[in-house]
Length: 285
Image 1 (cartoon, rainbow, N blue to C red):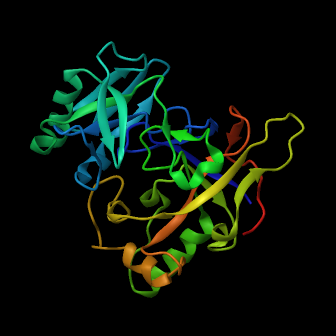
Image 2: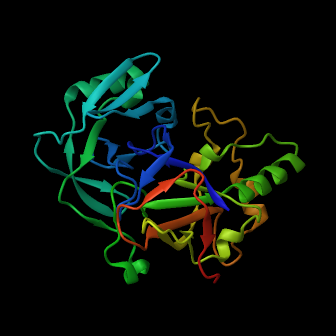
């Protein structure tokens, strides 16, 4: 098994960036979910409320976050933290400290997304603030994340996607790409749902000391975002692939549909993970 693909999502719920390599930090990949949109109540906004966010492309240069859309062109947001005052924003049950980007970004969002974007602001996770992961991971007190739903990493496997797509085909439905599940790390592997029995994953022992270990925390419960095409923002088949995931019942002791594993870094920070790196599962559970 090996690293098949790596993805970073600098702005929560906008398009991701495919990477050839990435360094591993406690909070996730360097720029992963560093920004998110909030409404007038300072509450996070995602594709769950605004599917059109899937049409916004994202890039990172040496100096800027670049957002682009066919109707609005592009806009650059400096990577350097803004001078704006820190505000409190809400992501799920967590109150976080963040800084608003310029009003120009909000105007650009209205051009790109239309009236549905009125009142939305782009917020940057504040330097120096720490958002701890869920309480059940108390054995890893140093773990934290930016604006991800709850954990710094999401790991999926190619075999499980193939098994899901086979089940969809058997129902006469189109297959879905891995982008529907917005993973950070995709592992090329032959055994469907094997990841549900692993305690984590690690790179093979490296002579240069650059190895990495991730510990799995909990299966990732999936939501309506998986039904949204991550390029067009359309929903080709209502409720799919969620209905098929539910029928597969890969997590019989848990409620809901699950795909992939939420994970934490369990080795030193800064290790470089590359596409093609050989991997191995940690002790099965």
